[in-house]
Length: 191
Image 1: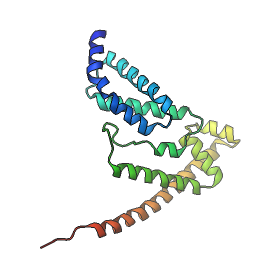
Image 2 (image 1 turned 30 degrees about the vertical axis):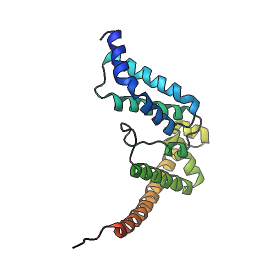
Image 3 (image 1 turned 90 degrees about the vertical axis):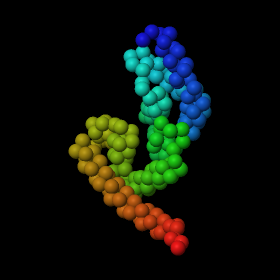
Image 4 (image 1 turned 180 degrees about the vertical axis):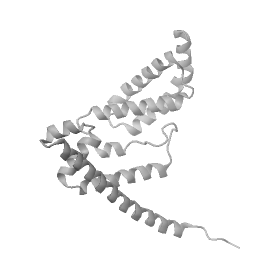
């Protein structure tokens, strides 16, 4: 495909999505000064991809690229807070606006995870955060904390087991609470 054809395709298919993309970025990225950069970088990646092969569905493709760019930037920051991750509207990125139920459910899950993390023993929590949030290898965690790789493995296993138990218990409580609430809201048959 020639460069002129790609330019025309880009102007016709991608640029009209700019207002929607800008709204998505404003909702999900805290640093307003970086929004233009993220948008331009997303455009550059879409254009490069189109030089190889044009995507069939441009909107989901553009929003997936943008989401990945935001995740990459968060990873490059020194600390990734769970609160900043909670602000992302992870579900249904191809849609302009996810349902409020999906947004609330995702925020609730992250709050449950944060509470469960806070309950872990300090060393276990630190190892889990370094491995699962910061993405460090077992060897890097062991070196930074001055412990053995086996201890890292044991602490991660222990932490994940405790998190799964805590989340399972809390989800059960939330589910039963939701069921009670919904039983009051069910419309009665009128005959």
